[in-house]
Image (cartoon, rainbow, N blue to C red):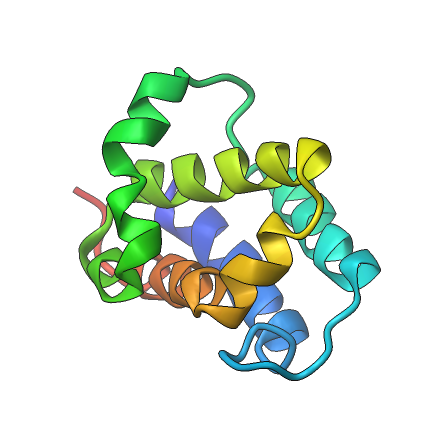
Length: 119
């Protein structure tokens, strides 16, 4: 995925979901969070496959969302893909990650990465 593609997708995601993903205990429906995941999938930001041990090795980022500010595109995709899959089997994972600021940090990082020059 090139920078212009990332930029067009993440700018729209940010505008659409910024208010919903703000840290805190305000109510955001599970349906709205599933819409967010569906949009990530539609935009090609979810991984089709990954190894769960990769998720495990990066899962420390969900405990410290400030680490996501330095994450790579792949790491952000890995985190959000794993969380969306975990939420299927353990409803509330996405809501919890939203409340803790993880989803907001990922969208912010997607947005930052989209404005960085391609390497």
